[in-house]
Length: 329
Ligand SMILES: [Zn+2]
Image 1 (tube, rainbow, N blue to C red):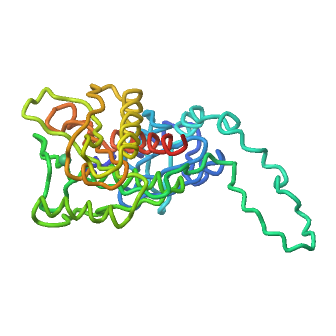
Image 2 (image 1 turned 180 degrees about the vertical axis):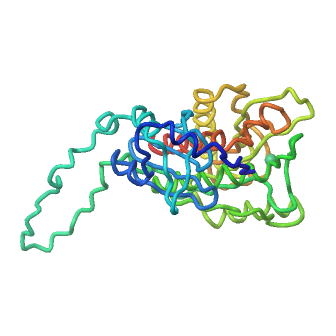
């Protein structure tokens, strides 16, 4: 899935560039971002007021979900990711300016109450750090990449498998949510099934969720239809008669609606809406439950998008942002 062309013109291109190339680490430091590398995809993710994603071998970056075309491919030198100087300037210009976001109480001297240790054994009141928005009310989430192992799920004309896309996007969602402080438990983190029989496999996912007792069960899928024209995203929550209570079902509906809205805002693909469904995993989840169908792998454009690293990152970011928004509500 992560096919990358070898950049033959890379070094030629470098000579045409005026500004000095910079390492991603330096760029991050300069702009107050925290860099991490996802070993699975090789992507560098820089987080702070803005989120920047770059992938070695690609001549584009994602800045807060927006695709930015770079004049040079991102490369790796001595184990460090390097971006062209002009590209660094271009990305920097798109970063959210520091003071715009959450008004962080000026990094002034710790706004702590009574810093002087008054000789009292007064219990230290652990104030939740107000600085960042924080994870919100969701403490634990079960993230369920659909299918896996012998269960391939839908398959596109070019051979793209639902199970691979679901896993890739889910791993990225996991990373973003974890970073935000939410505990994320996954039904699978590799290409494996939970049981060879579909029914047992689904039952295992439910059992896993029951044990985890999460605030949200989120299942990630890719759609398939006989009609190759079918395209777009749709989000499901359990229909009446599900395992969750009425309020949990309603919480699932709201979560589904938040995901739908975020997708509608960010993707130029049909919005198929929020729907009730009796899918086994969401029907039997003992908590608010949502199942997302990211896009149709059976559609030519859909499959092309799903095969694109940057597009998948945007999908993951959109789901994660929607979850965080709902959590902080
Ligand atoms: Zn599926």
